[in-house]
Each structure stands twice: as C-alpha cells, then as structure tokens.
Image 1 (tube, rainbow, N blue to C red):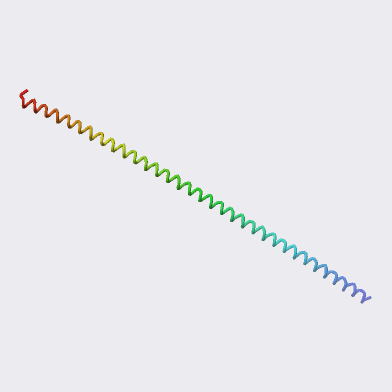
Image 2 (image 1 turned 60 degrees about the vertical axis):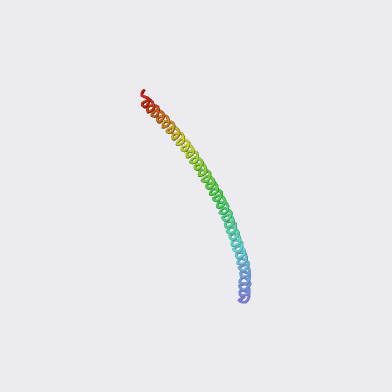
Length: 122
C-alpha cells in the first residue's frame, strides 16, 4: 500500500511538474508578446513624434520665410516712400528758390526803375 501511495504521489508530482512547465512556457510567451507589443507601440510613438517634429519645423520655416518676405516688402515700401518724400522736398525747395529768385529779380527791377527815375529827375 505504501508503494502504491508513493507511486500515486510520484505520478501526481510528475504530472503537476509538466503542467507547471506548460504554464510557465505560456506565461513566458505571453510576457514576450507583451514586450513585443510595447516595443512596437514605442517605435510607433517615436516615429509619430519624429513626423510631428518635422512638420512643426517645416511650418516654422515657412512662417519665418513669410515674416522675412513681409519685412522686405515693408522695407521696400518705406524706402520708396522716403524717395518720394525726398523728391517732393527737392521740388518744393526748387520752387521756393525759383520764387525767391523771381521776387529778387522783381525787387531789383523796381529798385533799378526807382534809381533810373531818380537819376532822370522824376
């Protein structure tokens, strides 16, 4: 009887060992699958981050280019306005000089006429 109990105990021990090994194998495969899935998810997240960063850099470069273009346009317009204003000032100065010359000419003519009249005795 002792031998049969020991035999049954040995069979149960061996059976549970095989079952335990199968469970360990299944659990290790499950853990490996989980690690693989996590690695894939991490890779996908890194790839998305790289893509998003690239898009953000492209957008920033486009915005910087537009800002530079706008600044250049504004500078060109300011220079054009300054040139126009300078031209107007030169024209106004020329007109004022011409007017002053005409006034001086008229005053000299009047003074000459008065001198001539005074010399002739009138």
